[in-house]
Length: 116
Image 1 (cartoon, rainbow, N blue to C red):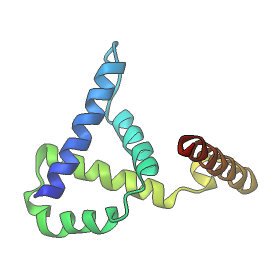
Image 2: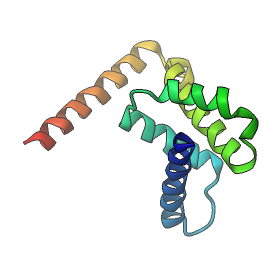
Image 3: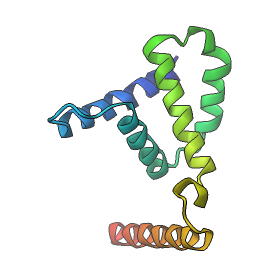
Image 4: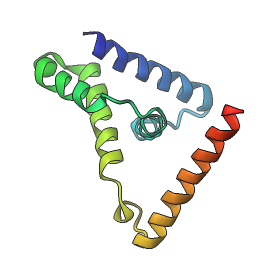
């Protein structure tokens, strides 16, 4: 169950970030999913899909309540990252590709600055 402990820890951190920044109590599940999706993109975990499949197959019947919700949110975030395209943003395909390239270039530039 160490994998599920990692999932719980991710959500504890996300909830801490939300509570710290949400002084008016307006944040909800959509906000945590957005933060989780961004975190997945930034972290680029190597074995996320096999780990999630493992959790789905072997612990599905045990995933009730909060744990089940957390796993579902993580699966949703992974699917969003995997299936994102121009239609997701109602954007022209060329504009989408341009924005993706700009983001990659910014990431490369930030990585180069951090390496120095």
